[in-house]
Amino acid sequence: MNKLNLVSYNVHGLNLSIKRKNTLNQLKKLQCSIVFYASYGKMRGVSILIGKGTPIKVEKDIKDNTELYIMIAGSIGDMTVSVLNVFAPSEEKETFFKQILKVITSEAKGMLLMGG
Image (cartoon, rainbow, N blue to C red):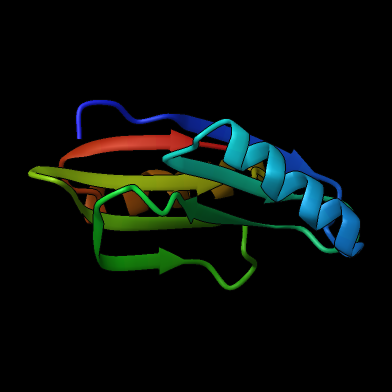
């Protein structure tokens, strides 16, 4: 794979089916390889969406129980990568970023792709 199309997408919930459909259609039009998805509002959290044509092999996933970050480590083709998506809280930022740094230094392998 010679090109990755990375997109960060922040949405205020996808509870309505029409909103989900419109969002997925927009992402398909962008031909995304990897989407750093974040939902904010009453229910907040992050996920990593992988495009169908992206030849990723996930070897490990790491996430916290508050769903403020998720990291997958593995490979895309012959390249070792770690993909990290974060949603930083408005309070206790120092503690959060120390935790993120610990995850990166102890778990990340190869090229780090980070969004949020």
